[in-house]
Amino acid sequence: MDAVKHGGRIVQIGLAREEATISMQQVTLKEITIVGASNGEKSEAEEVLKLMASGNITSKIVPITFEQIPEYVDKLAKGEVAGRAVAIL
Picture 1 (cartoon, rainbow, N blue to C red):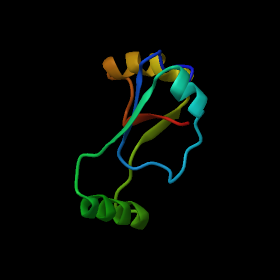
Picture 2: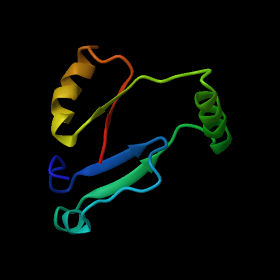
Picture 3: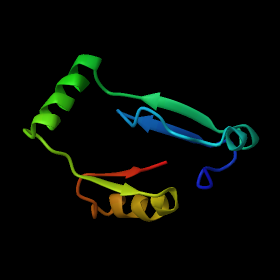
């Protein structure tokens, strides 16, 4: 939450952990907006999860902290990250 500016927005794209712990005080005091976004139907997501569980497809995910976001935005812009960098709460 420290990386989000006053009036900023957190966007959860795609599937995530079932639960996440966040400071609602920070959300209120900093007037943060939290939104979810997906780019497909639920049935498509379920099929992808089944394929991943079977080992038929894999994904490259680099877990990062919120403090690392600026560094990884630069790396992504330069094409230095294979796969996706995902900020973990």
